Image 1 (spheres, rainbow, N blue to C red):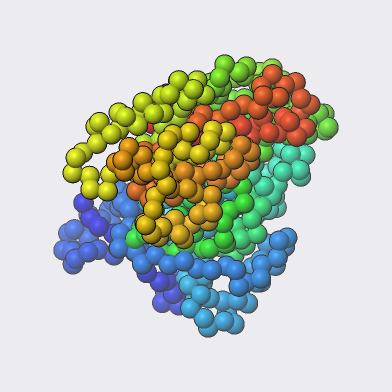
Image 2: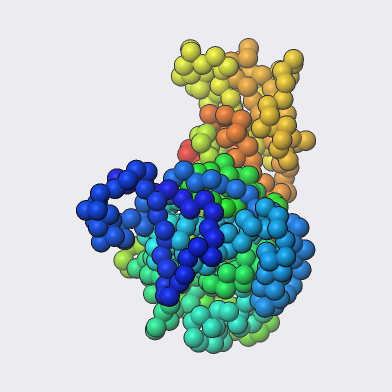
Length: 509
């Protein structure tokens, strides 16, 4: 297998373009002419190989003074002014990052959105899209969401006006964490591997000003799944991306921490009734309330994914319309939307969920006893276990001793979560426990979940204990008005339950 080396910095002045340009690749050693002929004759295979030995750099977007709201032309003007009038290293790197995607000759570029960091490539360039799958190790049948900068941009790409069913929804929730499904246009410009074996493509307009600036500056549709190794927790900071993809991509655009921490809601408004295929930043109740306000089919929005069981025997909340449909896969077996088929968000440590009954029955302590018994005697520093405390007490109520005379690990000292982390010793020091006291608010858990899982990875935790997400008592059997604060909390619970259950390796009831 050949090893592809990255373009460490791209300068368009070195090349002249007379048509579509695909990625320039570099080999680890000189190749014979016959080997080169083989490569050129099989570019599709080459495009599936990940880049290696990239010089991954973080590019700051903070100094650009990007406005929250601006037209595509205004964002492009800001980009040109910054990169042409500044001779700083940051300006040069930003130009290299934008042009590498615009001309499709290098790995994808990580960029910030309001939900998580995305890994972006030109959605019309099939070899470039292959680079996303290769960098992430993502299954090739998992569709990608295409990010656009405005409705006008979307309509220019599809060659058709936005369907009437989506217009009120777009006015309300765009820019924002909502992805809509549209039919693949008859004369589609989009790469087929963006929508593998599917007749629809998911589109969204991110509310992050940095994301819309990035898309407008490139003036291309950007396919952008989360910028992490497939299966791992989604990244909510530039550092998270660097930890996962160092050496696999060249550029990470840094817009600071993400605001939402949970990916976008994916909705199929082409189905009757409209279906939520992935829960996320826009709730079912908000869609229902908006549908009723405008008198359209979104008033009957249903659940189109498999809901997880509710802990403690609480009743599953009403879906608003009373419908709970399961359309996990298309007829060909491929997932209809990202996040529907594969287990992901998983940390390196084994995440174990405990029901309230399991905690009350002492099964947390029993699980620790199993871990101690099976631990290797050669493990010098003992076993490290992380605990996420929401409703349960610190360290899940285990009898721990404070850790004394030990310096705080650098991963913790540099973490935003350091103020809410406690360190304890259990079983005569054979286990070190790191407890993160998130608190009972579901919004706090949703915002922090991916970051906390990554922190435990950095601390070297072999196991992570967490309680199953509790339905709010007042909401478990609630018939709250769609769009109300109660129903929105209930729907956010759905999104967080979906993420933590997919991250878990084991559940103890």
